[in-house]
Length: 223
Image (tube, rainbow, N blue to C red):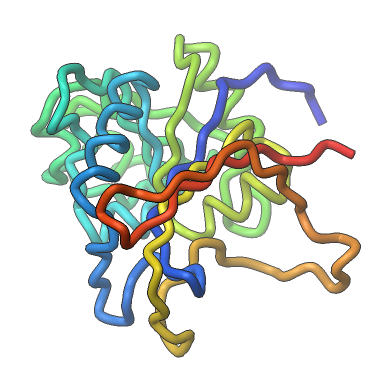
């Protein structure tokens, strides 16, 4: 496989103690005010925000900056089949929208996205999923130097599993949701053995002033 140069990648997620992003009805209001300020500061600093297509379709986020000064220059959607709606909020709140789709994505859908103002990048697919290493390499080629990834679980796990993450920031609500039908921070095929687990190094931990959250700063262990 070609050794693509890629942007610096941070995953940011707000989760519960049992590693859930949202309830079964997609209530994801986990972050406190302080965490939201940190999130939006990260968006402004990183200049590029990435989500998967499921997150876009379900949550329809604007991926813009609030609470602090600054703006997002690149709004990136990983979207194998070019299903991003041209009327999505990301098109209405400034910044360049980049849709990364598979090489076999429907041409008519791609044309509609381009007409809506999107930059469309094509990448090879594996098992109906975009090759993220290639996608990140092509994003770097168009000038994206840093990327803040905001989910969902499948893209989080794919990036972690493939060694494409430089830092992970978790805001952990000190509460449990329960596992049945709730949304996991990582989704995808599990490792068979503990020895295969993707281990992290804890760089920093802080207790939020609200008293209800912990902020964890992690980096992947390379050993």
